[in-house]
Image (cartoon, rainbow, N blue to C red; front, side):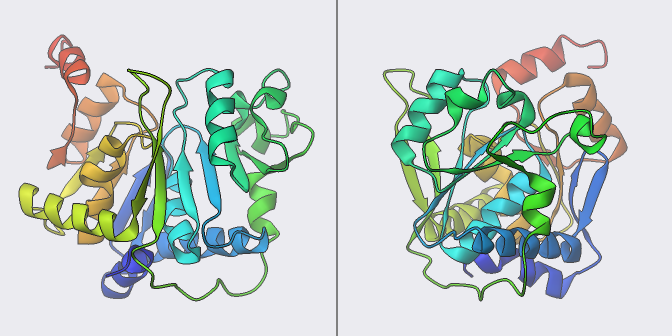
Length: 274
């Protein structure tokens, strides 16, 4: 099954089942499919075409996950950026991948940073936050608020494409031995990875997955998150790792599977709740 079909297929089978919970917002599979549709329509309205890069600079969110699937619908290439890096590093990666669209959180594009990260000729969208919703934050010049970007979409989202061999994800390496390098992954690669993850972890639709690793890393995005959505699991997504929040999720939501790297495990083992 093509990556572009995953969410709609699950929505057809189990529309009311919880698909993704992030912060105060929860999506059933039907609601997540609608979210993907709205982002697909907005991207198409902005002129996103096969092969175009859609860059994302922000912590984990439901919109970030949905935008990956929306890109797959259009043949665009989702490009998540490491939010831990500095503006000059972001600018270098953006200059290399030349995105047609950049979506970034407000704290990364405030008045002092917007000029440093905004690529020449790229349409830029600032992701909403509490201050923006309350009208307390100004939008940087030349940037469109995310809610306005979605609201401007018109019509039915384009038909799903079926070229699974085309690239759909562009991830940058850590750059630990040099400058970060962009690595392209196709829809077929993500599907093969999902099959391997389902087999290795024994994933079933009854599993409840917790993701605390950043989605700009394949560890956060592709070890369990995308395979879980392929398998019809319920995913809890944290914006970033917090030991207390991780304990809360495991206890209250009865999480069955998660991925924690050594630094996270050390923090949890040292915590009184361990």
